[in-house]
Length: 267
View 1 (cartoon, rainbow, N blue to C red):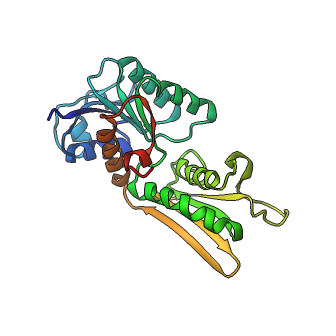
View 2: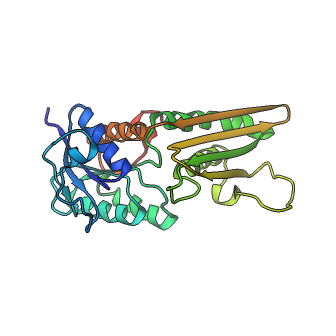
């Protein structure tokens, strides 16, 4: 079997290096291109040596243009990710997106591009989080009538978007299962003296500090009991392995917009 040639953008960052490690460990895939923003002092360095897997003969590039790859994995920032997505569209290459923080307009752009190429859009590529999302679709309709719903997330001090893309996705899944619109029922933090809590709302609490990879808890709090569904990531490798799993699955798919539940056949 010919290995799937994978390109990774943001290759010298923490997630990029972890993705390179995951690709190096996986079967039937190979790293064929590693990209870092222009101006980086690491352009030209060996991607394997930078990520700790040893020399692999793949130099760090300053642009995705002209790179040799079958599929792109992108965990960069919103604007560069959209640029990489457009370049992949022009080249007819599939894309796995782990970047978070897209607004409605930017998501519409991704949906339009997915008409031409296969795209997995996943704010969290962890298999565990994907299973949590699946469970929430069953839990929320049963518990919501008597419960207040809160989503609490904690990430490292360097994370820029708040709440996390994963937390937002948890909220979307809950709201959809209850026939609600998250944009209308979400409460992002509280301060001062307000009205008593509205049970129709979904609350979000955000914590930033230290080197926490990512903790998420959905709390269903009712009179007399609390149910908590919690996922804690202790290593970025869980996201990297999930992204590689998504890449292997996506290579066989027609153009369209997919997520990790599609990848794991949970629909």
